[in-house]
Length: 167
Ligand SMILES: [Ca+2]
Image (cartoon, rainbow, N blue to C red):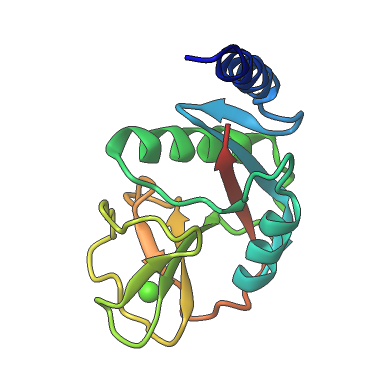
């Protein structure tokens, strides 16, 4: 290896470790696994507005979207923060639903996450999904629902939401 290559490698490692060191979750984001999550429980939005807000909040070149969920553990984390956060929120017109990034397109099998990740985990409530037409899915909190998902009959409904981006 030439000296030039050695120096290039050292510089590369130095810059990578700097990137690693600066890759923490910004304030108002919660770290979990390899990602940061931002829960907007008092800031209600339609499904598409929620996705736009998540995208706008990406930082340091990291792409943010409505959260995708890929495991029981990630589901449990998101539901627990949502459930506990609800206790802090004034009731008012509170609706116990949390938008996530799952899109239900023209059939109940035509599913995609807004962040482009694989649909490799599902957690539907019984009888769901039962709406189609580019609607969004939500984590439901209600008696017996325990965070299982529903697709929304009305994607314009103003609901809390959760964003996710790489740590
Ligand atoms: Ca539904």
